[in-house]
Length: 237
Length: 326
Image (cartoon, rainbow over all chains, first blue to last red; front, side, top):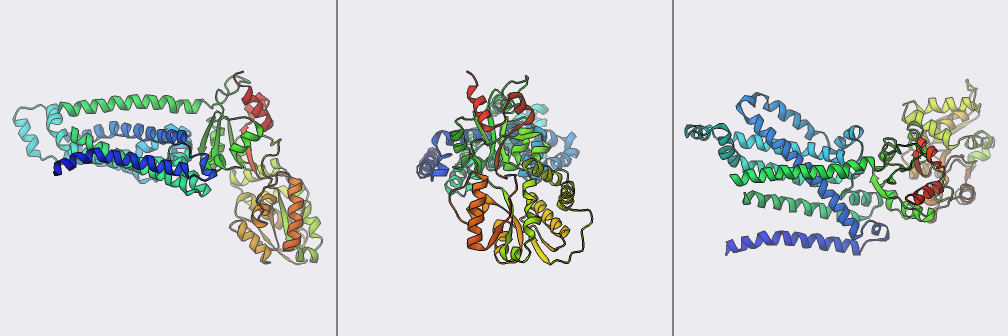
């Protein structure tokens, strides 16, 4: 009974999310006041959603590609002394407000997509790096010792013992990063990179709440969707 | 475990692919609107930088495009202060801003003339309480001659000296008044009476406030500096209540905000006459001659591009955009 319900849940969650997203969008589009109606048309909603997805995907994947290997490297015995230094540097990226990061790098990289991706990437690094490092360190030395005793080489210990054991913790970091990322990506609108922030910021400056609701609802659903997707990936692996 | 490695490798390949795709799309974003590289060549794609509000306001971009009969290829929305930099850095070929912003001069940009009078007008003028004017009729002349000397270029330069060069509004105001021969280096004894001068809180208003103070001092009045009041509502109420005697208000703002009309006026003289009449009758406020410059929305291009393409007005821009690819 419970197992059945559980299996049903895995199908139901995305369906419910999709239904909620579509119905919220349809409701706001159909009931838009004249000024908001200029933005709230279906092709535009899809375009903005696509921009948002691309921002989140590119920055998150680049962050995973950078932070996971880095986390593994600094967990090696040879690099343990520098680990706090690297963590500290990445930490700084996180402590600067995201809007300030956008403003700072705007002068370097110009406006638009690249700058937004860079800022989001910088923001996603820390949770992933920290969790990767923590995951690797959480493995008891006796386990590594035993593996070595069985004659396993270092790279096999890494791929067969350490990574699988640290995997859930790494995934938790990735999930945190991606969920934060979906929300932070709404700020990209300030520097002309589009995304759901276009709706939210326009809604604020014109006091059109339906624009704010649409942007916020879609962004929240996107975050839940990504979280669910990653949870599945984790189970599947 | 093989599964895990496969997923990791798949993810990495995906990263590269998406980054590549994003790089093409995003990279193009920096070039598509870029400066015409060859002399006289129009940009490949007319991208327009605007703030969020202007992009959807009924009296904003949609109506502008309808009035002039053209359409930008793409519209990029961003924070208001960012549009000037986007234009300067060559990310877009055209952008919106405010006509007297100091960055227009500092970044070598140019305002396109609104030849169809689309934008509502916002010429500022000194507004004085009638009581004060009746008591010191001379003020009509002292403050009245300032406005006609202030054109858009002059105001942009004054704003730039404060916003870009970091000078004090007072210093900038004094230099300009001396250049115009409106005041002398040494102010005479101030024994004619006390006048309280107000202004709103942004740069242009602070400069206009200081210009007023210095002109009054030079005419022998004692002044009280109440410049930097937080916004239209506060300045206007202070004037109506007699807490200040004079401040510079914009015709369009008075018409829409203080006099609560719905429909904006797009002709400077008409707006001035209507506001002047109504404010005197209803609130006993006297509007002295208005400034030549009009602090309204503006469509800007880089000076170099505009010259190369022979674009002076928004109609010219519409013509160039419409003739593209024909």
